Image (cartoon, rainbow, N blue to C red; front, side):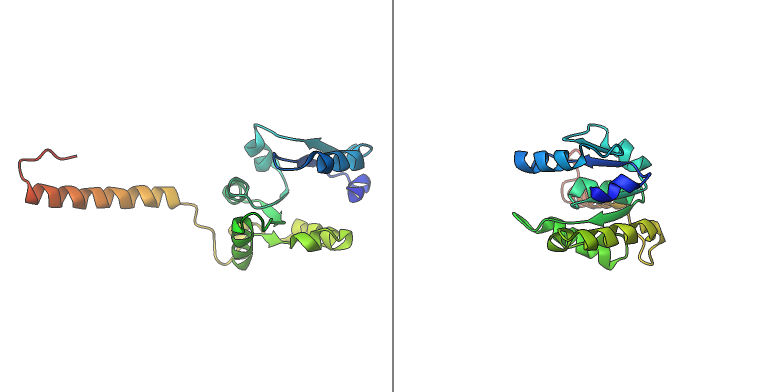
Length: 167
């Protein structure tokens, strides 16, 4: 938060539902006198903000990850590892493909390391520029595969029971 004092960049912190009251208070107190930092607990229109952001720093929850990828945004993820490792698995796998930057939660507690990671983030490539480009056509592919399977099922059903109504 101290780094935001000398910058023209605007920062928006969306704290989310799982942060404790003491953590919320600490962050709010640190940012109280920094005019370019806004802190909120929740935003209904987060997608619009992601679409207009230069970069995203988050934990790599499923929705955040999907928004980062679909809007082709630079991202620095600091994933949690408890109670489940799904954020960590997703973040580090995406980093292997060159889509995002990841900082271990313990490293993120070090201000100089966090600052370096943010500086690196602002010059990193967009996910769409990675050698292994993200495939965002999963829903269309599942629909097409489901259609193929239904056609096969109906063909087999019709052959076995010619007088049975088809789906």
